[in-house]
Length: 387
Image 1 (tube, one colour):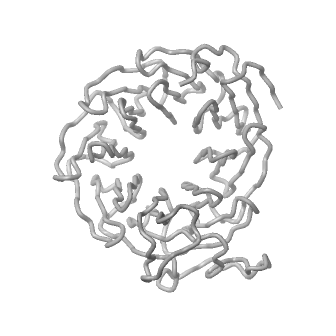
Image 2 (image 1 turned 90 degrees about the vertical axis):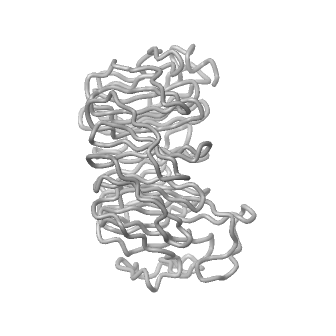
C-alpha cells in the first residue's frame, strides 16, 4: 500500500452530486465509477474527473445488485428483471425475466469452459477459455444462473445489429431465453447474500441456512444449518475452501466446504452482523451494534474490536493494510494491523451509503442535506479540488 494512504493529510478530492436517492451499490471498474440507486437509476462517472458519462434509467424499480465484466454491466432490480448494459454506448442490450421478486444479490464468475448451456462452443470473449456467467439471488427464495451475453450477440436483445432500437421486452420467459442455464431452488425465504467462486455458488437466506451449489449441474451440495436467525452476509475463503457467514443472531460461523461442518463460531457482536469481508490475513465484520471486529482470517482469533462509531456500520472495505468504514455521518480510515484510527475522510454528513477503493482511489457515496454526493480521493496527490 502506498504510504500516502497514511501520510497524505489532504488527498486531492472531487465531489459531485449523484441524486437525492440512496446509493445501493458502488463499483470501480477500469476508469469508471458505477453507482446504482433505489430510484431506478444507475450513474456511470469518469475516474478521476467525476464527470457523469451515462445515466441509465430503464429499470422500473430500485437497483439492489450490480456486476461488471469488462465493458458489460449487469443490474438486478425490484422490478424483478436483470438488465445487461453496454458501457461503451450506455444502451441496455438485454432484459432477463424469471425472478418473481426483487433481485437482491448478484455475482459474475468466470468458468474454465468454452461450452455453453446448449452444448455449443462459445467464441468472442477476449479471455481464452474463460466464459462469464451470472448468478442472481432473489426475494423469491431462489437463485438463477445465466450465461452473460457476449459482445455483438444480438439474439434476445433490445437492439438490432445495426444499432436500431427494437421494442423492449419487459416480461421474459426463462424457458425460452437462450442465456438462462439453471433455476436453483431450496431456500424457503429471501436469498440475501451470495458469493461465487468458479462453479461453486454459496447463498445465505432469511431461512437461517447457507446453501452450497454447483451452478453447472444445479445441485445443492450442502445445506449448512446452525444460525438461529436470518443470514445477511457471506465471505468466501478460497485458500482454505471455507465460507464465513454473518447473521441476525449476532454470530459469525466458519464453514468447511469439504465436509459441510461448522468449524468455529465467532462471538462478540451484540446485534445483526450485516457486513463481512476477507483478505489473506484478515476477516472483518461490521454490525448494527456500531462496532467492527478484525479477526485472524486463518485461526479466527480476534485481533481488534473497533468501537469509534456510535451507530450501525453501513459499509466498509479493507485490504491487508487499511480499513475504510462508514457510519453515523463519518467515513473513517483505519490501520488494520494496529486497529488505530488514521483519520476521518468525511464527518458531519447525514449518512454514508457506500465506500470502495482501488489503487490510489477511494470513492464514497454519502447523504448531505438530502443530496447524495459522490466523493473521489486521489491519495497520490494532496491538492483538493471541489467541483
